[in-house]
Every structure is written in structure tokens, then in C-alpha cells.
Length: 448
Image (cartoon, rainbow, N blue to C red):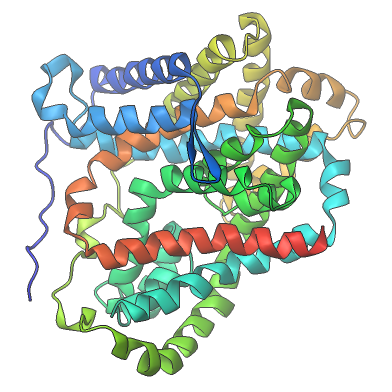
């Protein structure tokens, strides 16, 4: 059995991105955000539970559809593959606004975070091992071989690609596995985790704080999707606490997760594979090591085009514009109040950018956490209460819609590759994502 080689999507515009093209992606994101916020929340029953489709989900779907259909649209409306790749870069930079909002949320609700205590510390075990507890046995039962190690030792974000690439090489079975996990998570991760989290929440079997910790999977867009689906099913008075707990869990997973994956879960996953594969692997006639590579490192843009300060500023303005739209349409916050809050967030980001240039060896996310969280703790600085008061007027969920709109545009270019992946590795990847959410939730529930 062989697979059709995957070729890169044809370039639709020159590699350089001119002012007009960058302006087009800016306007397109704001249009999608406005449409998504106007559609609002749609809910329907699924068995004993409820599925919530919130504006962030509509933004993801609308942007992805727009990106996929670029060839059939008039030239001024085309968001082709080059701009889709640029949207991915904007997403990475634009997430800084989301991180600043998370840090202010954690700082402003520190008593609630502190009250979570041991649960917040030990839930990281669920995030770290949940992927392989559910994903690895299923992969072996489906006949997936060493690709299972790369696909189930983590949720397969950028840092995990680096770990596998350094240890095994991206052309290895483990490399193909983590790339499959990366693409699956990029294309379906936020949508899948939003639906799963919303459904599990509707069953009323877990403490809401446990679910909030489960949402902190270490991916900004996936965390946003999960906590949005969770908090929507609880009283508004709990929203701030749940968002603070989820933000703290997500920051902990993002910072600690790389080292846990490198030194703990990857060795454990490989060790378990060697012992479980002879037992579980015989139940499937399919064997992935007899199939040609479904995806290679060349098919994933791991070395994007240069992205300078002007591009980062554009990313911050795109997300800020989306927040302003959502805050106005859905949450009825006066424009002036939103602009003051956004100005504070942007000033903080510029300060972090300045410090990052002075300390280039310190990871950016650590600088964000260390510098921004104290700003949100009332009483730490003479003006802390002013910062907290104004940034609280920016609804947490308003940040998720522009973030997922950028995610939707950025994943559209990967769909041809996604279609070439074996359905088995896709199922395994989604199961691993479910495992990290459920694992952390179950561990946290033990303490509640």
C-alpha cells in the first residue's frame, strides 16, 4: 500500500507581502470577527449533554472556509496560501495580547488561584500523561507503530516538534507522528476541544474548577476554546474565577510542559511502546511501518518568512481590533472603556518587547508571566487598581474570537496535507488531545 505524495500548495502571490496584502488580512479578520459575534452562541443537545457553538468557533470555521475557497473568489477577496502562512505568524504574535489578559486575570483573582492549591500543581500530571494514557493504547490497537510515540507523548505543539526533531529526526516514524499530531491539532484542535469541553461540562460530573484546570492544555487557542465552552454553562459570577484558574493552568503547562515532555513523558512513552506493542499491535492487520510516509517535515512550514517588529505591531492591532468589536457587539461595553483597557494591554506588550530585546536568552513567555502577573495584583503597585479596573472591562472571551479567526486562516493551507493523513493517526491525535483535557480534569477533581 502506498500513499500519494504530498506536494506543497502552489503559491498564489509573490513571497514578499506588500502593504495592500497585509491590510487585506487585517480587514478580513475584523469582518470574520464581526460576523461571528453577530451570529452569537448556538446550542443543541447531543444525547445527555449539550454542545455550544460560540463566536470563536464560528470565527474559526468562517476563516477556514474563506481560506479554502480563495481560488474561487475575486482577486480583492483572496486570502491565498501566502497570506494564510502570514496569518499563522500573526497568530503567534497576537497571542501576546491573550497572554497579557490571562496574566491580569490570574493576578486579579490570585486568591481563587491560591485556593486551588495542590489541585493546580498536580493537574499538570494529567496534562503530561493524559495524552499517552488514552492515545498510545488506541494507536497500537489500530496498528500504528513508532509513529504512535511522536503522536501521543504530547499534544504536539511547536516545542514538541523541536524535541522529536532533535532526538529522532523529522524523517523518522516518530517525526511523522508528531507532525501528524501538529497538523491535526492545528486544523481541528480548537474546534474539537471546544466541543469536547462543552459536552463534558454539560454532564455535570466534574467540579467547574477541575474543568477549568483541564482547559489549560498549553495551547493558547485550544485553552481559549475550552474555557469558553466551560464558562458559558456556569453563572456569570463564576466566570472570572474559572478564567483565572484556566489561565494559571495554561501558563504552568506552557512553561513546564516542554521540560516534562523532554525528560519524562517521551522516555515513558517510548518505554511503554516497547512493552505494549507486542501485545496490542497484533489486533490490527494494518501496520503503519508498511505504509509510505504520509507527511514529511518539508510539508510543514517550520521556517516561516522573516517577521519583524512592524508585523508584530500589525498582529497586536488585529487582535485588539477584534477585541473591540466583540466587546462592543456581544458584551455591550462602551467603546471608550474598551479602548482604555486595550491601550494598557498594548503598553504592557511594548514594555515586554523592550525587556525581551535586553534579555534575548530568556524565553518570551517567562518574561510575560513575570512582568505582567504582578501588575494585575491589587496593591502591589500604587496604580495596580487602575490597571485591573480598566482591563477587567475587556471580556476574556472577546480575545478568543480574533485569535481563532487567525487560526482559521492559518490552517486552511494545511488542509491538503491533512486529507493525506491516515485516518488512524488523526483519530489517535484527537484522542491524545482529549486525554490531556480529561487527564488534568480527573486529577484536579481528586483534590476537589
